[in-house]
Image (cartoon, rainbow, N blue to C red):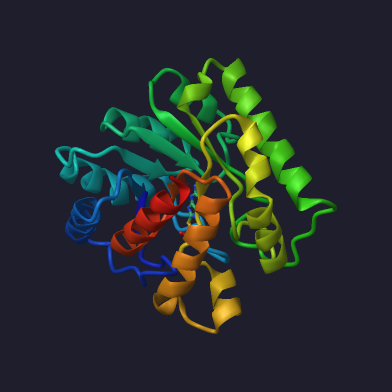
Length: 256
Ligand code: 7PJ
């Protein structure tokens, strides 16, 4: 899954893709590099980010979705807003990637009547404040329990299990130690019975580990990608598709 941010403040690409034409070109580039899914986001959820209005989020993503109609690859929209979900689905989106796991009022209903796939992600707290001293008694138990509950809630609302993907939400209300614990225990999350998505690309924990700014975290991100594959992730949400495809090629040969 290749990441295309359509936000002026997205932390790892410095907002380079706010212009819809630039975002469209970037998505085409990632698709040509072998991305199987393109993830379009119009609201930054980076730590400390402020929410944008529904109107603004739609104005950012709809022109990009329009421009990618003939891309020939599934498009995912990274949003937590039911109105944005509905409009994105009308525009042909194949997947809703929700960092709130469809917990907003009306979100479940917004996706239930379509056939789209859904990524259910765990986060603790709100992006504006979630990195202020997050605490868990048992991070694996809490994140697993949450995702299990959301999978069950989806099934109850009529979303078949084969439409669902689960994601522990690295960096969302988690310390570096929490993230590393979740990564080590990722194999346990395969017990959820749905494919696992991991988003580790360029994240701040890599800054802590390597001392490097976001645009210099490629090597660290590739190391994380391999660890996630080893832990059972089958979808990697990444900024650097070409390089990650090489990691996948190596992993597949090893795992054959
Ligand atoms: C994730 C995401 C993630 C899923 C972002 C960033 C911050 N969606 N959206 N998983 N992260 N499913 O790109 O670093 O980890 S935004």
